[in-house]
Length: 361
Image 1 (cartoon, rainbow, N blue to C red):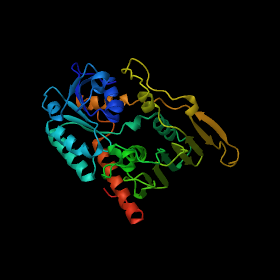
Image 2: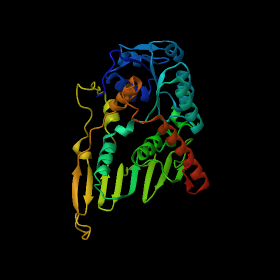
Image 3: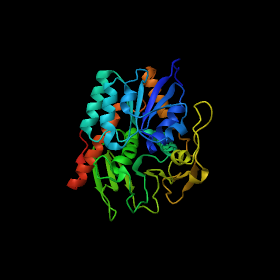
Image 4: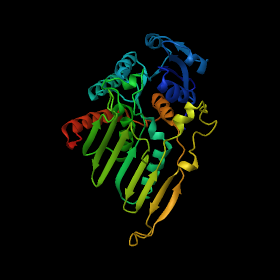
């Protein structure tokens, strides 16, 4: 671990819905070198009950006017990300933005330019690079466990056949919907593994009988001799594999989602780094590697259960801390936040045109 500065980075989380409550405040609190200074919650007392040591602020302006606050985390509804991040950057704060990084690639570029001008860190919250299953896939690919990878398939499915009432996530703003909710995770993971694709083919659609949002997508990213497919649906009662890899030596199949989110929703506490492990997956959900030891005898296969690497979202915030302290670069470079949003725009364009289009940046 990088050497820590003696004074912790004073951090404020804006918003205490699912994002602030589950994905940000617990992990900010668990990373040495960061201090959860405050939480912006416009009304209610959930934040004060969960974090009695943190200040509860009733406005963003109150947080940004405080010169002791160095890092601001934007964990609010999607359509507010750009305006709040811009406001925080203009106040000279380092900023973490929950996904989506912005609603458009033009907004993303404007934020990146502003952060550079202000000489502050701007971090896209692509925390699922620290999902245990993704870390396992990355390890298997590094080991060439399936040989030369030919197809990579990533699913993140749900079963919500009826729209939920009273949530901004079901409103028709183009910043909402599955393309802006789950696709940023899946596309970012592909970019982290394989880099920028040559082309993109996508179907972005509304599959439910009654919906105001895009509730399904299939995105294929084209690479030389490799297809990487990202898929999600809100009407998947029987989920597909989370990951399915096919290569010249065999395949890897993994069901189930990373356990960090449901563990936090159940009320578990995240231990500080160095004070306990976080978080191993139950053996029942480990994936299977199926290979042909002798390619000349493809019918003779061996199947091995592969232990899932421990997932750990704390490492995202440890990276932000180190970048602010100048001891290491961001693990998720700011530019990759832009690339994800640009690819999601291209996905909509491909879907509307019904064709494969170049992945031009």
